Amino acid sequence: QVRLVESGGGLVQAGGSLRLSCAASGPFFSSYVMGWFRQGPGKEREFVAAVSWNGGSTYYVDSVKGRFTISRDNAENTVYLQMNNLKPEDTAVYYCAINRGSVYNTEGFGSWGQGTQVTVSS
Image (cartoon, rainbow, N blue to C red; front, top):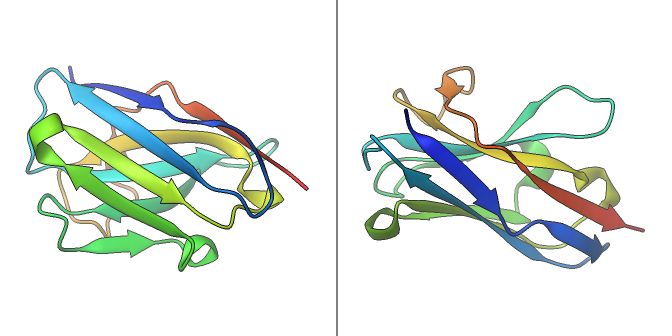
């Protein structure tokens, strides 16, 4: 099985920045689409961002457009989520996942990591 390990979460004040990382191991292939999801307290898990295998295509939920940037380093089997101008509503556990489909198939992700907590104070 593919193993995904998220890191980089923490506590930050509103307006601050964090960079999340997700390292993949096991039978992982660079051709997989990579994505980030989050689940806030009392909320359903929601899609955040996805990136194609070569980084040429990205897709974001409207609430993070202009603030978050997803990228990947295939040589390191790692995907990143740069989060700028963080807001309290961004508080959530952030998970990375893989998709054998397209960046727009937000229901096709799996092999979830354990998550990393992001807390944004007001």
